[in-house]
Structure formats: C-alpha cells, structure tokens
Amino acid sequence: MAQFGTVFCDHFAIAHFTDGAWQEAAIEPLAPLTLHPASHVFHYASTCFEGFKAYRWDDGKARIFRLDDHVARMQKSAASLCMPVPDADLLAGMVTDVVANNVDDIPAPPGALYLRPTLIGTLQNIGAAAAPSTEATLFVLTSPVGDYFEGGARPLKLLVDDQRARTTEHLGSTKTGGNYAAALGPTLDAKEKYGVDQVLFCPDGDVQETGAANFLLISDDEIITKPLDASFLHGMTRDSILRLGADLGYKVSERNFTVAELLLAASTHEAALSGTAACLSPVGCLVYNGEEISMIDGNPGPNVEKLRKALQDIQYGNAPDTHNWLTEIG
Ligand SMILES: *Cc1c(COP(=O)(O)O)cnc(C)c1O
Image (cartoon, rainbow, N blue to C red; front, side, top):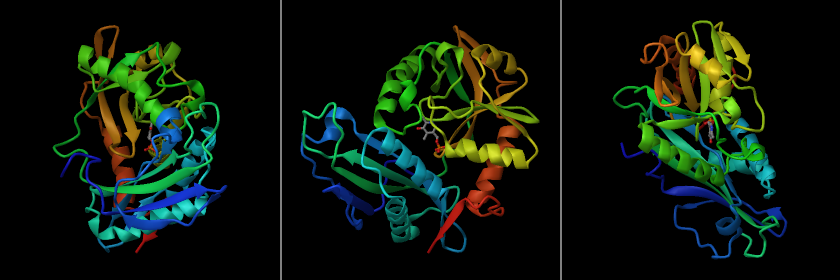
C-alpha cells in the first residue's frame, strides 16, 4: 500500500459559501482547484480540517466512525477562526455522499477510507489581514489507507520539551494548518538531535500533546490524560479510549500532570499516543535533558494493546457498537 495520505479516490465533495450562504454541495471528479492568488487562505491562513475514517465491513457496507462528533469539531474550528461555519447537515451530507460514492475503494480492515473535510477562505483581498474571509470553499477529500502498523507496532520515542507549547493557547483545540507549521521546526530539530519520532510539548512542565496526537498514561487499572481545555486538540480517539477504558473497569483520571510526575510514572505506566491515523500507538521511551527513560521495559505493553483492540473491534465490526459511534452507509 502506498504511503498514508498519498492516494485519493477519484471523486470528492465540494460546496461554496458565497453571498452570505452555503450553496448546494456537489460530488465532482477530483481535480485541481482554481484559486485566485489573493485568496485569504494563502496569506492569512484561514483554514481548518478534520480527519476520520470509514470502514468497510464483510457485508460490503461502510461505517463512518463518530461522524457527528467530527462535524461538530469542524464547526468549532471554523468558528474559532471566524470563518463561515458549515451547516452540520451540509457537511454530514457531503461526507456520507462521498463515502457512498467510493465504498468499493475502501480496503478491508485494518485498511479504511480516510476522510479529510477541509475549509478554506477564498475572499480575494490581501488587505484583509485583520478581517475574516466572507467567502469560503469546503471540500471532502477521501484517501484509501492500509494498515498503519504493517510489520508490527514499533514503540515510539518522544522528546519531552518542558519549555515550548505546540501552538498558541487559544488555538490549541482548533484543527488548523498553522498549528502544524508551528510544531514542525521543533519536531525536525528533535528528530535530528535526538533521533526521536515526535516532541511531547509540555510548556512550563504541563504535559499536553505531540504535534498531531494526544498523550495517555496507562497502568493496569488507570488511564491518566490531560483534562479538556483550549490548549490542546480534543481527539476523538482519546475520548473513545477513555469511554471504552471505563467500560473495561479502568479508573479514568482526566487531570493535569507535570513532567516530574510523568518521569516518576515511567517505571510503572505504559504510555501511548492516540489519533485517528494510528489509533493507539505505544510509546517506548522518553528523552529528557539528554537522558533516555523507558516506559516500563520499553516494549509495547498489554494495556495499550487491550484498549486499542477494544476500539478497533468496534470499528471493524468484531464487537457491538455499544456507544452508537458508527453511521452505516450503503
Ligand atoms: C487530529 C489531532 C489529534 C487526534 O484527534 P483524533 O480525533 O483522535 O484523530 C490530536 N492532536 C492533534 C494536534 C490533532 O491534530
């Protein structure tokens, strides 16, 4: 299978916001967009996106995971950037139409169809640095993806940065392009200097998240992760793992914790990154102040494995959808 995110289905959904209203959406052959060079998005980063998946079960029908929650999160992102907010029905309809249109291209689990709704500001005005884009385009791109862990889950190595934040405090929970640009320099530096996979951003010692995934500490009976606030992205995988963890009898502790506590927990707790692309990935070791600290023995642990399997069993149709997270298509 080609690299994640580089192959696309041949149709996509698109809608425009003009004259103060969302116009009707259409399914079109995937093709380059024509945008004026003065478009707001190019200059002032008026953009946000979503990322989630549809799975094709043995019955040939697709199931979209947490559709309404992703639509709501995109609305929140758009509002936080003062962009035209897509109507929930419009966006959900675009997603279901494009999935229905591409069901046959969805690889069987653990493959999936990755869904990427994207909103861009298209107002043609380079003088609008301090003004919102009153025109916008919304599209839903789809990408068939294979098993993220082909060849087994390799435990990740994270640099613990106790100074820098991933992005600004007030946009931490917005899925917007600029946040990834902000995390890129620190992440590339850390890869080069320490050979790590990602940076765990912990400004002033507060353990937040990496460039594109949430962070969880997991023992045999407890899951610890930062409580929801504006500083980090509210992952749907995080939320799903917490709910399934509670079902499985784990104590769920959404609380702030510091780098000092994290380092103390390393001998007794597994750690994981959560996100749609990789679901739940084990963290094998941390690098802090030039020292390597392994999470227990550095190998993928049974609790991360158990929780990942519980979520994937629902997504793949091997366990009942007890939380009503799936939308059936086809
Ligand atoms: C998308 C994203 C996540 C994970 O969100 P999911 O809904 O679980 O895919 C976590 N952190 C950041 C910064 C993200 O962009």
